Image (tube, rainbow, N blue to C red):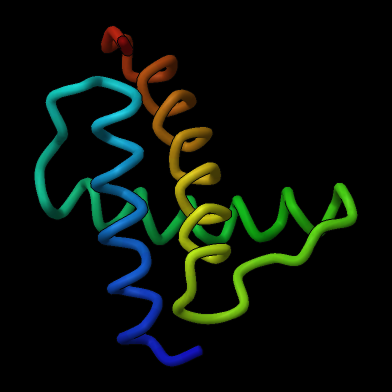
Amino acid sequence: MSILAWVVLGLVAGFIASKIVNRSGGSLVLDLVLGIVGAVVGGFLFNQFGGAGVSGLNLYSLLVATIGAVVVLLIFHMLSGRRAL
């Protein structure tokens, strides 16, 4: 998957996860960075539990990346002391 595809997938996943976790969204840069990290974390977690990781620009990969981004955002909010939900 190209860098541009990771950026697009990370941006969309980060935006969706941000809306799920704190309902208001964060900054565009924070959503992008945490979304890309979330895509990697989601792919890793799905591989560890026997599922397929991020495989391209498709709906399944968006789901995996979003789940990973939610995990990353929850950890980020716990560590930074911000309130989630």
